[in-house]
Length: 176
Image (cartoon, rainbow, N blue to C red; front, side, top):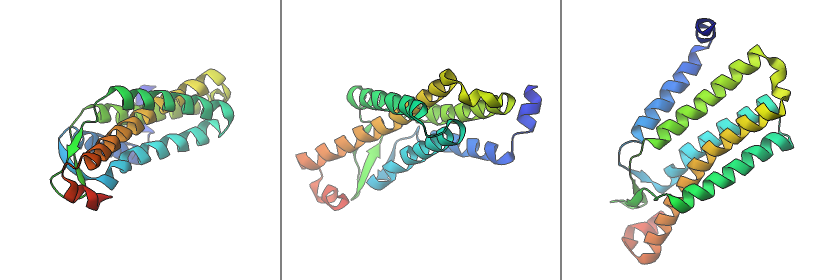
């Protein structure tokens, strides 16, 4: 049965996985990024999650509430208790983002959550109306999105404090 599931998966799904793994591997290295580019991965992961929630469980109170509750909780925890993993960049409008394997893990986790949910709903179409499944999957998406948004908030706070302290004020001012 597993072989059937894998062979009936469209090729574009594996291309998406390859892209996510590539982006995750890139995120493992220190790199300099434009401030506006910090928003790309959190926005894409947010869109993927919301699209999946709406398509599979509907935009109703239970799925969106589970997602939003988990998102806010994790976002606040990541923002408050993790380091920003960023410092001043060398050129105007950039930050030096320190590498981490966590974005890779989170992107692959979102992919597999979407994949397993899709397979489950194909095999058991009525499962989309199961409140426990709906709340659990949507809360997982909220956890993943909360991580990305909490990390972004931390990076932006670091950027803001660098601007306020005047560290590299000549180029940080041009990023605003």
